[in-house]
Image (tube, rainbow, N blue to C red):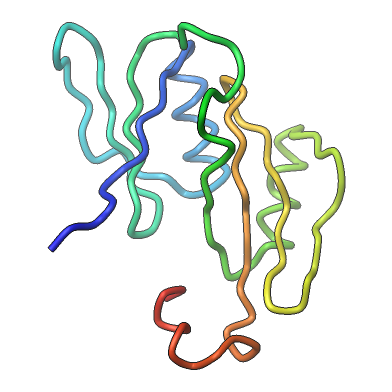
Length: 131
C-alpha cells in the first residue's frame, strides 16, 4: 500500500517554523535528529506529517508547489488563533457550501489552505476521505 507520508519544507529559521505550526495547528515534534549533516524535524499535525529541514530555501517563492492543505473542524477558531498570532490574511474565509477555506501565509513563503468540509453536503462515498 502506498500513501503520502509527509511534506518536506526548508526552514530558514527552524525554531520560528516549528513554533508557528505548533501554536497555529497543535503540531507535535515526533523526531528531531541530525540527519545527512543537518537538523531534521518531523512534526505530526493530526494524522499528517511535515518534515522540516534546517536550511534556508535556495529560491524565493513556492516553486512548483502552490500550497498544502490542513483540514480542521473549526475553521473560525483556528483563524481567530492565527489572527491573535498576527497572521495577516489577504481575504476572509470563502464558503462554497461544501467547503470553507482560507489561504494562510506561513514562514518561508509557504502557503497553506486551511479548510473545513461540510461532510453532509458531499456524496457519502467520498466522506471517509475527509475523516
